[in-house]
Length: 326
Image (cartoon, rainbow, N blue to C red; front, top):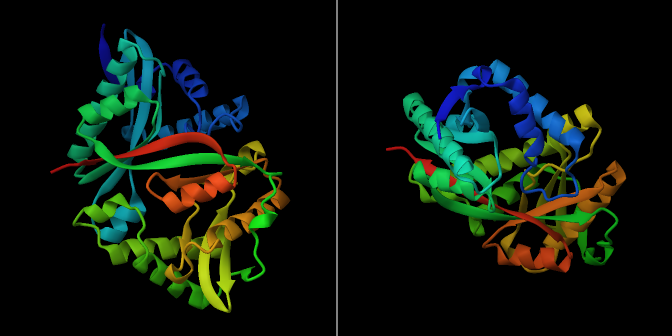
């Protein structure tokens, strides 16, 4: 069985199209959202990126057949903010079978990407993978990647009734300037799972600053920030973003996964999270969303309990893995 890794432009374009249109996107969203139009959108988007950045993409061929493809991309917001070169593996697709060919293709592809990361001087490379993708997980492990975190994905029907989660004592409003300081304080004084905190190159205060920046960006241009207030005091905040590119290209309304939820330590366990989600759910409904996606880190017991109360449906488990290049 011959295995070789080539550049994107040296692979059969129709074989690549077939690979990407058969591989679920996003892999951990679950089935309700997946359709041929979204799969076609994904391939065209990735093809355009490969045309602009051909040196970032690799394709694995096993026995002359395309078995997988992926991109190594610099994570600009982390690299620039911390002064540490960080990359991620993205736009991946591979034959989702437990065959020897599938395992061999993933192993060769990820080995080539690791070697490129070393050549480019990256210190960290991250990858997110659906938990059932054993071929990709084994290839990552063979390339030196190790488990970093896990994330549970769920979805809810937009006509689900979350009004009972709204409380009279909790007021949901638009953000004001002082809220951003409260968001930073809350992140600083509540445990939040971020595997980068275990690496000495990543300072917690700088990580918190990135979270606050995301709330500002969402408020100013990306979507909406929902703020919860109790007795005139900041109690928590939640982002709401509709993916603009998917909407413009396909007409589908899909909520963005980069959400963000923070609760002030004084009000933890008081129903603030569910009230924020209930208010955002109404906003999603007004925008025409069909399915809303929610998630929680696998060790965030409070949020998982909240998702259970919401009767959210399981969509998948995403595993985060990291390679530190010494």
